Length: 138
Image (cartoon, rainbow, N blue to C red; front, side, top):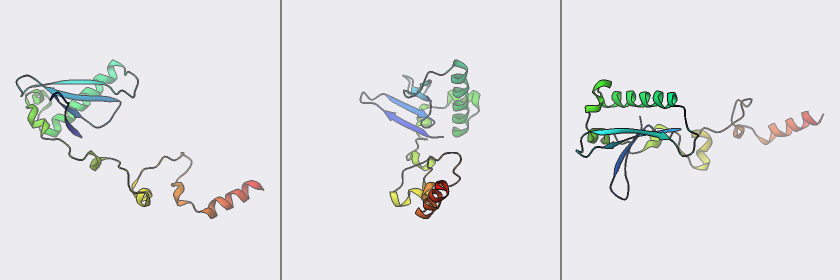
């Protein structure tokens, strides 16, 4: 699970749970600095989600967080905010896709391809396209 500790210009802290998704989940510390509250909302780039989808996603994220901190789901609320903040993922790119220099892009990246193409178009050579054109011209 990607855990991202954040702070805004006013000094308020949040811990975002899970990376980028259609539903964003985060926790905020309580006034005592130990307890926390869970919040979630649809991402700004997506449409509102049905309540049952939101509840299912919240359950999934909280169960994953409980496993990450080594607590039983019923005891998760007792885990201090700072302990969860300590899980901060320094480099989220370690767990997902990341851009690579152009020369290495084909070796390391996922590329968008139509379903009927079984290999990246970079694997094709000019000869492949020339022979295709000749066949379609006939």
